[in-house]
Image 1 (cartoon, helix red, strand yellow):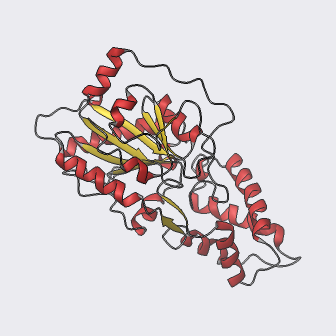
Image 2: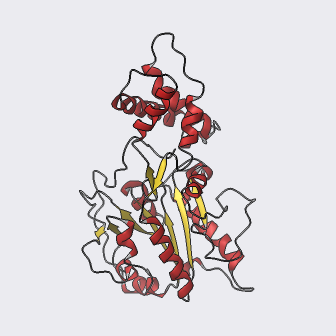
Image 3: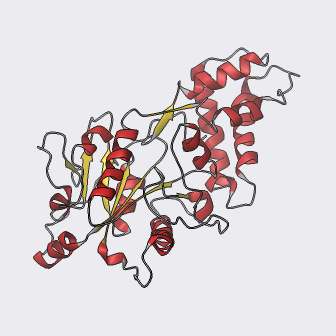
Length: 328
């Protein structure tokens, strides 16, 4: 169960900052000279989405346990209120107050259904566990069909080029994102920020996702730059395990690109951390003016584009894949 499941992410903010000016020639040369690629992706809304509207799934489970008398719209309204309340008193999925994600979601689920119970009616004891279990796997979510082609192309790029490619996930979520990704069929390395028991990979290319960074583990949520700093730290650890003896790690030799579906959290967070950003706007209606829309541009070198602008946008990961390899 990730993010705010009853609402679709809003990629554009009410007021976008002024367009980023063209970079000086020295900065362009520095960007073009980098040989390696760190590409990190958001999870909910970028890699996967609910298999059915979550209000519908909540209703289905509740009715199987004997609850009734509510519509999907009713549940949407009460969920939003419960989510807002719980996020205020126990931020970051309960991590900030040591509540824990399971109790956090249990409070939200109970808060969603409590207004719809009849007088004297008890909350089914299996309701929260069943919903938490559902949204911990492919039972509740489905992966977008353009995810695997992108990840496969990135791996091909890593094998065929002289540079290195590392793929990570940075997401505002609780600690179950790796389980969801694995349930959806991705090969996810156990390395995650804040965990010291995961062995550093001996080489690259064996996993779809080389590491995961969850806001729950970082203690801060995007757009906070510490989420991106956590990814840079895991990149350093990854390269320590895969580099040749005596080879030093230099972050300045890496292109750092973040792909997400929310303008405020993903694009602004990445730019603020010194990364480039790719906005995936699957239902393009309006695009922030500092994001260069690429769907109508013939595929070429995205690094050339990033030498001119900080953020670009596509309507799908499939359209982004057409621009691979990302390096010149």
